[in-house]
Image (cartoon, rainbow, N blue to C red; front, side):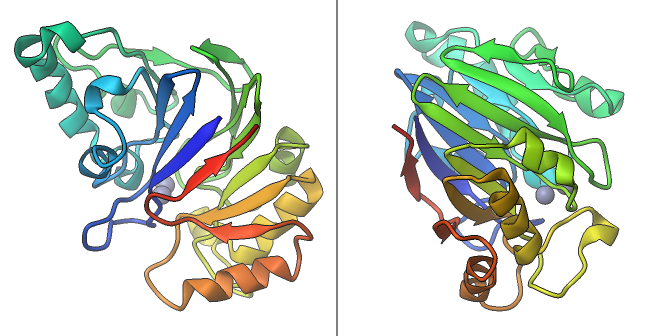
Length: 246
Ligand SMILES: [Zn+2]
Ligand SMILES: [Zn+2]
């Protein structure tokens, strides 16, 4: 499995970058995980929009779906301008916020499919298990598995030990770290670097990637703080960072 980080910013993208977005590839199948502000533009540095085979959304905050409107318009134009490239693209999303779910529908070209907590489903070579996390709004993390390995994405959440169980033994844990050590982000449904590292340590993850990074402080500090707790390798999310699980 190859993972490309398209965007990693908390809340809004900084200049020339994007909020939450990850491109997952296995056997030529491309899954877009989250579609935050700036993602549709950034994504085209790494693949054609027509190359996306499925979309998976964690929740309906704009830093996770802000560019879904741009994706809808692309889907509208694709069969007109590039009919040879047109194919069905399932969009997987939760229905615990009915208004958010309904906003994903667009004419005939986008018809979302509901996923449910703890109910694994298959998208191409990916088996995806949604895991309810603890955020300001209904939100899901995902355990994502292929023949080559496994990944867990926390999406937006405060620290809950259940995530460590759901992420047990994954090759890579992509965990949000919206705050620095000692800061309590739980009021807003977010974790700090130490909590992300604690999850990685409990889950015995092979590697920890810190993402959903804040617009203050020095990000390198987050890495140092996580390394004090997690015994495995820690990396900061960065635009275009590629990770391989084999
Ligand atoms: Zn959120
Ligand atoms: Zn967010």
